Length: 400
Image 1 (spheres, one colour):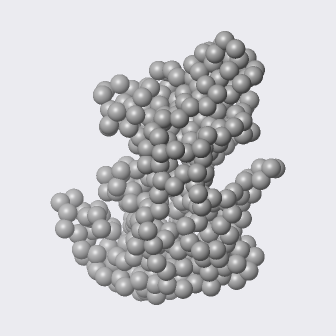
Image 2 (cartoon, rainbow, N blue to C red):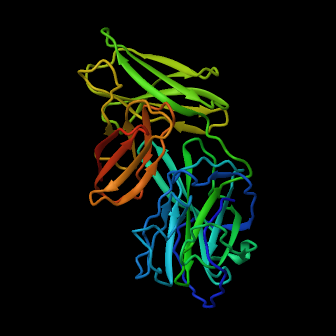
Image 3 (tube, helix red, strand yellow):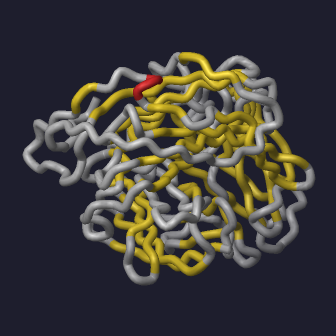
């Protein structure tokens, strides 16, 4: 557990009954789970999580990713430094994950700090994301209902031993681990799951969300994509090359092409052979702007997409030193094309007013980085890339 920052413990007694609606088709059973494997510790990045403000009450609130602390919390100077209102509801939403658990089950675990775990509540909702020929379908498949933190953990007084205490972070810490059991939870190759954790809090004190788990082990996705490039030849052939690391149980790579950067169609595949660099030739490609991405498929059906590379109609190479963002306008995900990066590089997405909304740490050696923009409201944003060597580039991002 990372070092956190708090004051002495304080019990605050008040009881609040709130309900949050759900649309799971069948009742969900909840049992103690198995959550030893933390897949998002937030020590260096937000891990693609976001905190939408969705409940609409006067004390509706949000978590903020506090990079200096390494967790999600209310406290983020200068955005929020004063005591939050109460009672309040705030939630955090994970990126999509394949289900690493048995069919019909899903484990969810997280570390918390709240003021009063006997009175404060949480709710977990499991949201499926299924790709179909007609588009992407989302649905709430399982829900825990409102639960007491104390009922699912052993809270202990939170004691701060750090040099810079977080103000108004009083109370108790613990780790919730729960298994959702529901026949609506499937393990299809086209379905992933987003986990929403909502807090219902009853005092003017900050709270913390950290160390997220979805199963008994650290679950690696099939592969880490480092870089990808497309080269156009004189005979209308496009050569796609990509390099990978941590290739674990990958069966094949499917190469997909698009005319608009949104709707992709498979154009071929390459068997995984434990190499670090792969190549694929796409023949008879029209002399127009085209986009490519990769889909790695694991031997157990799990899959992962690479970023998207853009090959302009008048270009022979998709690689460029210029920072660019596509597709635009974006819906749920963008690809950022940039020069190859070294250690220390960082991307930041801000509002036009300069408010930091998301921080991304690109992979070392990457030339394309995928960024989840779900949860961001429609509008114009600024993406800023610091290559770690004092060089700054910016680009505009339009979200619809």
